[in-house]
Image 1 (cartoon, rainbow, N blue to C red):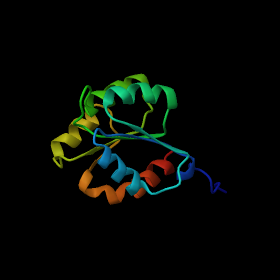
Image 2 (tube, rainbow, N blue to C red):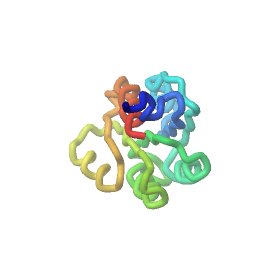
Image 3 (cartoon, rainbow, N blue to C red):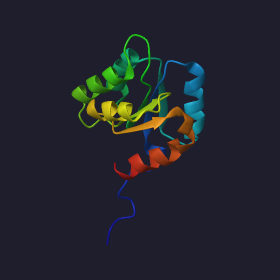
Image 4 (tube, rainbow, N blue to C red):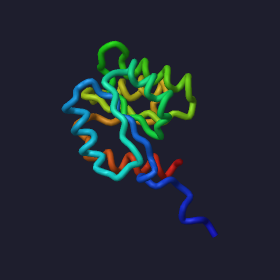
Amino acid sequence: MESAHTHRSPERLKIMIVEDNEKVRGLIRYALSGDFESIIECADGADALETYMEHHPDLVFMDIQMPRLDGLSATRLLREYDPSAKIHILTDYDEDVLGTVAEAVGACGYTSKVNLHELGMIVSQYADRM
């Protein structure tokens, strides 16, 4: 008989939000509206690298367009550091080519910010795979 606890519950997840706009970070946090172990916020990709190495979050929501270090470069560097890192790109740009590029640098998924209401479902999907 298969155990009912073959995945991690979302309440046990550490989530990191990487977004340069403080108001958008707040919207993402609100959209997550879950009870997580912790939600860590970073303002750009450079901060994300250092913070990831310190906290080792289970799931990262990463913006693309940011100062100092963009999200695609940060994703590539994080995946080089930790090949098992789960990074989901959130962006204003809803273009298929960006999804292909995001996948090429190691992102596990891609969502337009107009679909923030889907974040709870996205977290559950990642939790089911952990």
